[in-house]
Image (tube, rainbow, N blue to C red; front, side, top):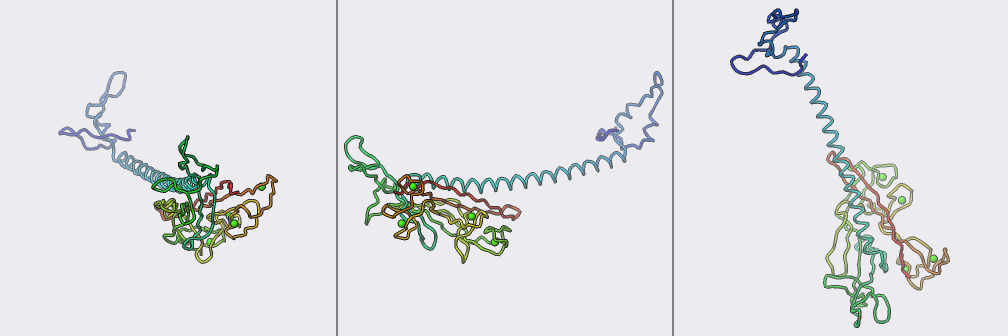
Length: 299
Ligand SMILES: [Ca+2]
Ligand SMILES: [Ca+2]
Ligand SMILES: [Ca+2]
Ligand SMILES: [Ca+2]
């Protein structure tokens, strides 16, 4: 049976014929093989064939459309999740590029948000050959920041530092995202939503993870990002314990420490803990946690 066929057009075109009409066109041929008139080959298809063909066509179209929509939805969701991961990863890498050789000078709050301030080794003229160096004439590191006008020393009364902080721009509600972001078993909590801001003292502000970074829990502060029941602040300095004499959460020269690994110096790690969220086209919330640490050489 032909599933698909169309009658020829023009004056000789026929209307679809029923099977009974076809047999009327038969004539006897050699060896008893029935011959069909030329018109019989242009006979088209029967009404039953038409209905069956249409039914199959409609069913295949419906299945194809469903599969297409599911594939499209899956692709869009995958792209969103990939984007969430990528923005968090890029932010971590940009921050660590800056902090890899930095000296952390404070970990505190700026405008009520967690803020990390550091100085970096900067290359400055020292005279002679080579004409510039990361060390001064006495062999000390030139601590400062690269400002828009060039490398600057961080001096009392003339600060040049790098500050990384959280800039709030809205609120993310668990109920809206349908995600238990703080892993406490309910969807009743809300969090600040914003961006990671990176800025030198004189420089323009660079914003990362724009409007997708989750800050502190509204009314509570730090919370557990990854479900291990331990709070994960945006910035966290961990490592060997020390007597934090000036209470800035940073180990500095002169603050005594417990030298657990007996290498005669303080060993610490700066953790940057990021939680990113976004909603897909169907309104479903997605989240991604990215925690990474960089070893500090603060002494
Ligand atoms: Ca919750
Ligand atoms: Ca945790
Ligand atoms: Ca300290
Ligand atoms: Ca040590």
